[in-house]
Image 1 (tube, rainbow, N blue to C red):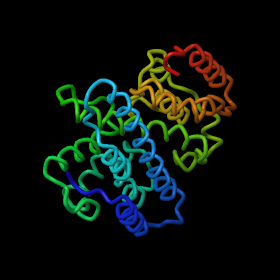
Image 2 (image 1 turned 180 degrees about the vertical axis):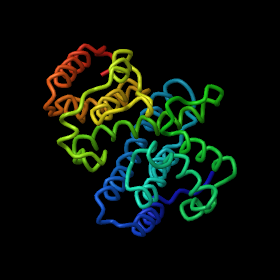
Image 3 (image 1 turned 90 degrees about the vertical axis):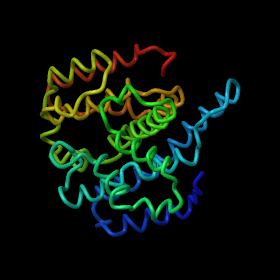
Image 4 (image 1 turned 120 degrees about the vertical axis):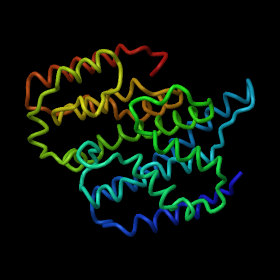
Length: 266
């Protein structure tokens, strides 16, 4: 197993991000997001270990889960530099781009110089697929577990980002345009079916907020729901200020729907 020096990895990450415009709020956003996703991944992985100690040996390594959190959005910084947007459909698939930077351009060697071939294949797969709509069906349990840990950790912090960062910085849309927009029927249907929203389905600024709320339905682990409930950001997102009566009514509907969501989950 590779040696994981958390302090060293954090220093390499900070040095890498320092090569970009750190005064750009989008760069700062993704830097801070990365730290929190790593912490979320560690907590979720720990919850699985504690559960499996009562049942069987757990294949999850908490340090590896933490590192995946640190590396998962490495492609975002170059994406921002080149395209000034987080919207993949208007720029580049940030997950695949980041995996290429790490494993084709060999940035991974700065973070994990003694990573094995098997570990590299695992990390490449998990990072490359962390923002996919659905994971491939024919993957083994270890790959799936690490994917689900990272995807949950990422989604949890997306709720926080939507509440603590100006929406115009996230979506590149003036706030007034955001508040006047409607929610597409296709996006509403995804919410009603309790499923995530494909990027190509989103057509209006408000669709992005609803799409991020829908990520709540996609969380896999009980600890992930616990973290999301503790933080309370999903409820804050439901208080979105809109000037459009139809959109306001829809957000009230979503709020009631989530209130009735099974308490065994939240």
